[in-house]
Length: 261
Image (cartoon, rainbow, N blue to C red; front, top):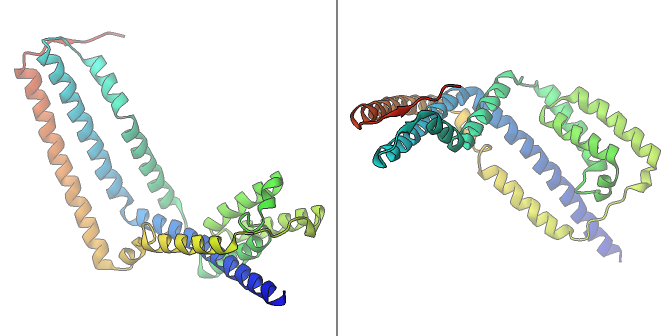
């Protein structure tokens, strides 16, 4: 019986450490992504914006060509509306990129001492109310809110906010009784395997793998050159598409309908 308890206790300690490691790696990955966008965000956004413009121009050409082939008048308002509808997802993706770039620019890098303090406070909080360890946490709305705020503060490495949250969490736990929330992880070995897979996934995929690139000045310069070349190619292609559209409308015998609002 004692041996079984020791094994379960050892498994719990492994599970807890893996859980905290995964959370730390997720935060590091988010930080790496911010650094990546600080470095390349403007170029990535400019390139994608030009790509979107090229796609938009191609769709406009396609709609106009269809009307010409059918011998119909080209209703430019209808064409523009159809193109805008087709471009909705692309525009949303562009907006997302622009917002991420803006967020990265405005983000501040925490000092190593503040980052370490934030990590220590987070570990203390996680060991007390992490939902993957204490599923019962999800039964308390106040704890759910406190945990969500903890995750956000940890990703921002906001040690002061985490310290305040720790006080609030401790007070709430005292109010409901420390023993109210219990550990219940019947499938702990399976969860350990899953956590190990998640950790490996984080370490071997973007954005975590960007770290190697960001540490290499030559690689950073090469990446910027690639993005600048990509931008030039899109600019050239957009110009070609504009000429194709102009020629199509001028030489294709197109007749337009311009609707007045």
